[in-house]
Image (tube, rainbow, N blue to C red):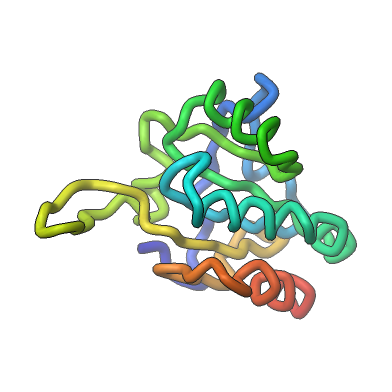
Length: 153
C-alpha cells in the first residue's frame, strides 16, 4: 500500500470519453484518486454518485477527483451515462497503476481467494506527494470526509 508522504506514482491512462488522463498534469492542484472494484455495482455506484454530487466543492478546493478501476473505457462510458456521473473515470485494464498504489490485493469471499481492487482513496497534494490514504473504504459518508481533508490541505 502506498504510504503517506511518498511521491504519488505518475500515470497516463485512458479515460471515459476517449481521451487520456495524466496525474501530473493537475499540479499544482490537488487530486483525489479513488480506486474501486467494478463499474455499476451498488457500492461503486454510490461512491461515484457521492463524489459527483460534491464536484463543485472539490473544484472550489482546487481538487480534481479521479476514479480508477480495471474496467474498460467502454464500461466507464456506459457507467457515466447510466448514472449521470461527472467524475473522471480512468481505465487501468493492465493493472499497473493499481499495483503501483498497492490496491491490487488478494481478497476472500465465501472461502475462495481471488485478486481484486481494494476500495482505497488517496489524496495527493499540489506537489505530487501522498497527503492521506484511506484503506478498505466504507462508502457511506466517505466523500464528505475526503472533501474535508482536501479543504484542510
